Length: 382
Image: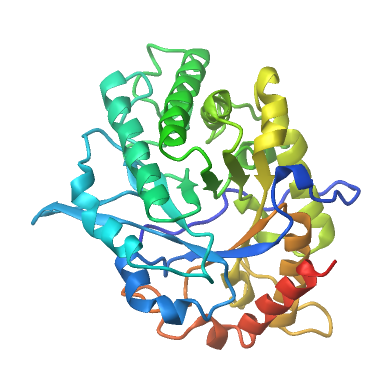
């Protein structure tokens, strides 16, 4: 697995907000938990451990696909933002794994694709033709493998630069922020056209969409030109430009990791439905409302850790697991469909990742598995 995932900023000062009910037009009303984290399996891991994985309280999970084009090279679909054409035959073993799996329990699974290594400039037509081809291959794999869709992780983990930060672009001396914005929107259109052609009913889950820059822009003195993800809203506009009616996009709102009350989750819901929508181009705001679902991320390590910064204490008179249950129940109620559960230090299923502890999450946070099931029961009650 790749490097440490963290939200880029701590929770902003909350303003009073009325509870906003989920919008049924944004998606199904059946609430679901999706698992992801450092114990992320590859296709071969799911095939080997299917029965064990189906016992967990999730409707699906995020998985990776890896291939070896030659004995010296390892290539993951997650590292899509790079030049060089990919051969679908390289991933045949991943297709074979997915074709061999038939799960009635794990129905909403997502193939991860990311913005790394990010070494192709937005004005590089040849390089972007390769990136679009990588997305197309991933969408084809997801459809043929019976997956719900793709999970996009926009966070940079490796050099040379952050793909969505204008100040880190190789051609910034030659091209203005406005020019890069237009180019990012073009690339978003190209990506969406490619994946929709392969999988026209795909769900494009993200760890975050416009909730990230919208949350940062709540702080005075910031603008998209200097924001870490300043080019991301334009890329999303490109998605909206080209998205057919049946494509669903999910803003996973990673920034909600430290949320611990209904007020917190309500504030973040507004960042997606209102502030995030306003970052879309005016001509795309109606499409944003029709295509984008509200989701929230739960950072399990906050209930395991014993001190800040990533620490949520037990509520008065309750255990850490009971506090987790209550917060997940709120998140599920205010989400349109999905809440994703992210963990780093422990595991839900077997993994070869050495930085993940041997003990499972139910040992690290006693009764957390029952807590998640109870939260689902609460959220699914009429």
